[in-house]
Amino acid sequence: MFKFGLALGGGAAKGFAHLGVLKVLEDNGLIPDLIVGTSMGAVVGAIYAWKVNAGETKEHFKRFLESEYYDRKTYQKFKEVDQKEPEGIWVALKHLITKGVIYGKTLTTQSVLSQEDYEEDLEILVPITDFRQLKIPFGCIATDLIRGEEVLITSGNLRKAVMASAAIPGVYSPVITGNMFLVDGGATNKLPVNPAFQLGADMVLGVSVSRHLEPSADLHSAMDIILRSNTVSTYRLDMLQALNADFLLYPEVEDLHWADFSQMETAMERGVRVAAENIEKIHRLIWKKRVKKRLWPVRKRRLYHPARVISIA
Image 1 (tube, one colour):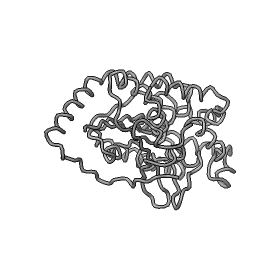
Image 2 (tube, rainbow, N blue to C red):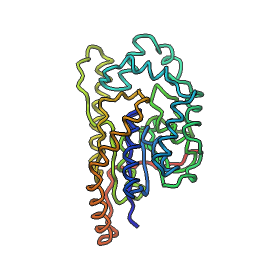
Image 3 (tube, one colour):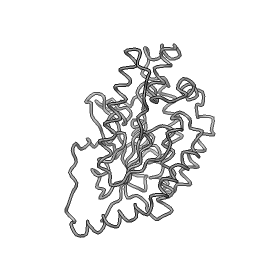
Image 4 (cartoon, rainbow, N blue to C red):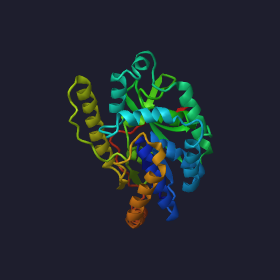
């Protein structure tokens, strides 16, 4: 059986572009056979794998953003200190720390936002708790800080898995389970193409909302240089991991702020646009891959470094 896999990358609020891509695929009869997501890609992917309806998935997020649970003030702080978005959340964190806004928290707690608030948000965002409740096979990427490796979560507690995948270090609380200390999957695999192949996909469509590395002239301190080095390393890793995708979509969301979740409609429209422009190419590629599998059914793609597959209780 031919399997069409979808890899959804991280990117905070920009990740709402994934909704637009899913809508176009759905409208053209291309429901993914499996989905793997990182960070925001994991959040969107999990809800879609549950509902299998882009419109209902969008309404689910819209209800959350309009509810009393959504913390607009915290994200507004990030946006205020990072108006031009030179390098995203890490630079925003630096500005908040150096201005003293969250200095005490970074020294005495594991995250800017409390674990209770994070768990409460995810309880609303991900109302189901078991991977077995999903209609589409799904996996999400997290990073184990203890062993320094990428993990692929495919079973167990869905909500906790998504929490781990989206736990931006320093912002959200890590998920501690067994001997693992799990944080945002973007640290090891921001666009999980290889994990989708690892789960059995014959073709993988990757959707990245973090295509460009913005130039930086702010290199006046050791902190600036450390953060920039980390950003460059992550960007280069993302580029290498994306190369394995059979087809890549890059929604044009560079002008949208990563912390502005109020731009869901705009981000979704960008996803619709890029998917609609490429849908015929995607259809043709899927057809070719199906034919190739019929001719060479045992042919497999070599994975350079498979992720460790885990279940989370």
